[in-house]
Amino acid sequence: MYGDSATIRKILMELGDTWAVVGLSNNTNRAAYGVAGVLQRFGKRIVPVHPKAETVHGEQGYPSLEAIPFPVDVVDVFVNSALAGPVADQAVAIGAKGVWFQLGVLDEEAYDRTRAAGLEMVMDRCPAIEIPRLV
Image: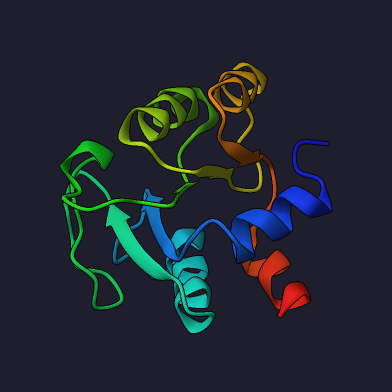
């Protein structure tokens, strides 16, 4: 399993409250939109990361992780598994403390690289399911 309960708790409760949500847009039919809303309700600052750089849930969007002009604590990844590894590598490069691959987003090599770089990581889980269990 790629994210035991201790790691999930640490990412959600201890690493910080600024979450970059990669793949977040104003498409209300996408899971990222709903999950970002849940994160906000539980006190997280969400930062939309999408090529369109849209403002979502009242938060300014950015076209990439590198374009965010302030520190990010956790990178929440809502992209196809084939694209997730490079996003995890970018999370390491910007100094994030944790990476969260959403349900269905799987890349074991990226998981290993990210953990080896010292970041906490969860894969194939959803914070909107996990956070209510902890609060």
